[in-house]
Image 1: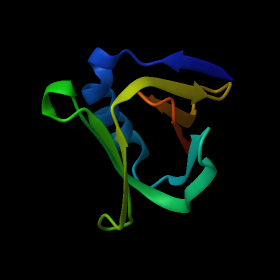
Image 2 (image 1 turned 90 degrees about the vertical axis):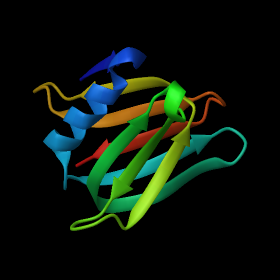
Image 3 (image 1 turned 90 degrees about the horizontal axis):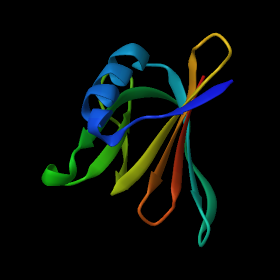
Length: 110
């Protein structure tokens, strides 16, 4: 398993490519917050898209799920770090997004 950090200047392109390569893969969305604890926001939902608006356009990342249309959306405000986890074959298994408040949003892919 390997982890790599995605540079912020590549996020728009990275999330577009990620969406195109992983649309409809089942995901689990987990939010890890020191104050609120852990929360599984969604489980076994098909990924619809990841949309990043850069700092000059809002600075947020929206994770959308749905099969034929968006039926759930979660927004990460002010993301500051994005990690991609891959298995030994190079297949992406998770994305970890850390925001300015150090809340982790983990997108697990099946």
